[in-house]
Image (cartoon, rainbow, N blue to C red):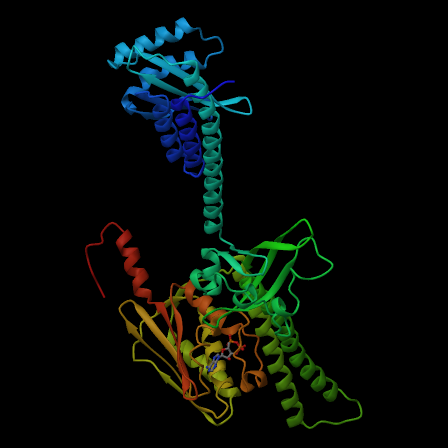
Length: 537
Ligand code: ADP
């Protein structure tokens, strides 16, 4: 019977403990460090190294060494190549070993090298050297190292796989984190286990607080009836299952804002078809939703706005041409006057609509020239005053000898007419409507003020949006398509100016815009001319 001597028994015991220690490690560098150190100790060696075949060229490179410094690695390369080569003879190996010994002045007298094999395929090599000449590596040493090498190979491969999985996970995390869309991962109980930056931005929930909560709480999608579908009809719980579950609707952010989102889910199911979790891709579709809503409002507002004057015109025209009635001159004049007014209104609306589409297509052409603002303002005020009731007082406030502005007169007339007609429309009790201006540097500042209903602070920036109308009783009673201020601002801006509003609800509003004075463009022309030395005002 083959008996193990004491030394061999101790070695066996050692091997077992070492293998356990190595297999408990998942960090590749730590595993390799342990393997080489234990291997050297196991056979009472003095130096050791592990080389691994490395992607992409599958070259054998030293990954870790014992008692050999990295600057000495290169000297071992020919030796390793020989050892790994298919037909390495003992003589060749000994020759290469001697070369290393001489080159590095290291006492490498004996060597045992073994491949690290995984299912017969080499993943690398472990080599141990001894400095002593008298104690040769025995067959038992060789067998021991072989047993150890196969254990070590498994540990190394585990660590490699773990590292690859970790890297892949880090890569995925980075992709998810950088994604412009919101991405969250849900567990089997629909709780959030991952929540990227875009999600934080979209929902206003900080990641630390969102993690662990049910998704219906953080990203509860509400339908048109304001029901949280994530609670009442969760797309991930619907039966029969749909291939690509989605949900679309409104969410309320942590800070109380409303956003529209479209959420797509990629669920995973277990062997018994049980739900294991899902990745949700959440996209902010607020802009698209608002656009759709605006288009719907646009169609209804425009058709209403077009229908009303047409109905009035048709009614009056029908009445006036009745063959069975005789109308006196005054009635005829009044009736025709109303027909004319309504036709003007239609004309203005159509003009506005055309301008909006030209603006969108970038085809709004302007004819610039010097414009006498006070004179233009007086004409516009006269027109408006003629149609307003006597609860209004119109005031014109320009300093004498107001310098001309550089503008497209017809467009600026439209801006003034829009602002003045709004001042009248949104002042149900009448009051003073003032149109005036002053100069500041090379700019003219023009304002239209009223004592009407005013505009709430949150609506002030929005009144300049296309089709936006403040939703209140007066708004519903007065006609308008929500285009006037949008156009007015666009026109002022193409002149290089700005239009803004100051308002106190219940007290009135003041719209102010700037236009460049003619002298600014003259000064510019002069600067471009060759003799620009003389300054004149
Ligand atoms: P419209 O008057 O056709 O509705 P506008 O673009 O001219 O469209 O104005 C947008 C909205 O801004 C109006 O519906 C109204 O609610 C508000 N608004 C405009 N001017 C005034 C004003 N002078 N006073 C109060 N609200 C105003």
